Every structure is written in C-alpha cells, then in structure tokens.
Amino acid sequence: MNEYEFTLKFSLPETISHPSTYLEKLWTEGCDDALVGIGLRSRIALNFTRESSSAQEAILSALADVKRAIPKAELVEATPDFVGLTEIANFLGFTRQNLIEVMTSSGSAFPAPVHEGKSTIWHLFKVLVWLKERKKYSQQETLIDIAKANMQLNIAKDAYNIEPTFQQKIWSLMT
Image (cartoon, rainbow, N blue to C red; front, side, top):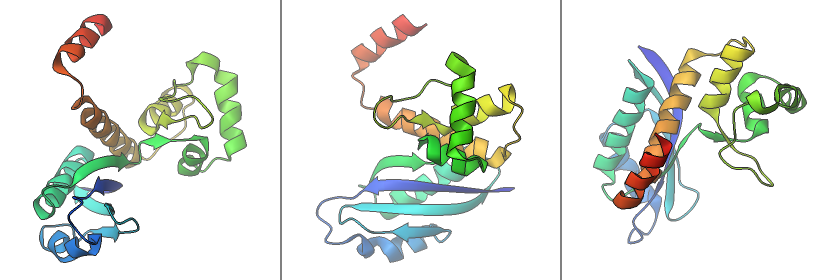
C-alpha cells in the first residue's frame, strides 16, 4: 500500500447555501482522509492523503466517496496535473531558471504543452516521465502515478462532453 496525495475540485449544485453544509456527510461517506477547502460559495476542494494499492484506485475511491456525499457535485479538476514551469520546478526541487535551461536546451524534445500563451501549461505526468527517461532525474514513483491518474481523469472528464459523431471523426484522423 502506498500513500497518495491529490486534490479533487468540484462545482456544487446552486441550490446549496454554503459548501460547509456537506462537511459531515463527506466525513461519514469516507472523506475523513481529506482536508476540505470551501473558499468559494459554489466550489469545494478536497485535498486527500489516501492509502491504496494504486493511484488510480485512490482517486477513483475518493471520487466515489464524494459523489455519494454530494451526488450532484461536478468534478472540475484533479490535481496535480495541469502545471506551469514554477509548479514543475517546485515538485522537482529545481529552480525555475534551472528548469527553463533544461527545457530550452532540449528544444522540441521537451514535452509539448497543453496550452501555450501568456501562461504555458503542461501535463505534469508527461514532464516527469520525460525527465526520468531522458535526463535520468530520479522521481518519486507515487508522484508519477498520481500525476498520470489525474491526467487520465481530467482528459476523460473533458472527453465526456465531446459530441459522439465528432469524437469518431477525431479518432479516425488520429489513428
């Protein structure tokens, strides 16, 4: 059994006056291993530290616990996944400047970002694996596992909204 740290962020039904309404129900449904953040009225974030045999199992069991407690909650994001250079550097214990140097010296071999713009965003998993395989940087396997599971969950959540006929056309062009 490993211990996995991750955060699940949810949008709440608009009919609820305040997210604190759910605290006891979350506790009784198995989220007693999470710190709950209730900063915004219609949002709730649960920072889990969960023991499990795999990262996927940890995340899926936490998601199931939350959905039992708040059936109409909609997953917004699972983290860590979408990250900028500063966050990647923090995870690795690098300076941002060191990571920029690694990235620029690697050219197009460095993993492609999910979004380029004023703030460039990557999937943490892709960068961690690339650094481990290409640059031989040692990584915590649990961080790699949780980043991979979160990436897959976030992609699946977004793919759920794709119109089926459009999705078929996309897949036919990508394979």
